[in-house]
Image (tube, rainbow, N blue to C red):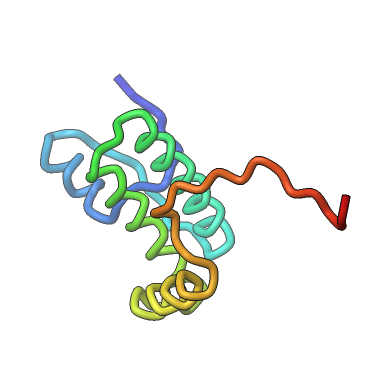
Length: 107
């Protein structure tokens, strides 16, 4: 029985499939399609986290984020530096603040 996936997979998945006695057809994406598929994978992994709420799903999200950062020429360390800079300037999410509205000007 043949199952069609048409999605980006981790590097070792073809080897794992073959070791289990199955065959798979793979191709290598160009940079434009790789970026598009990584973005799709980010949404897929985020939805899996929302459904399962496990640390493993959070790790999958990070793996995709690191791959996207690398495509943009940004290392994990640089990404963390950017995150910390933004955290210092705008804060994090630990206070659980929920913005309900903003009124512009004076009333």
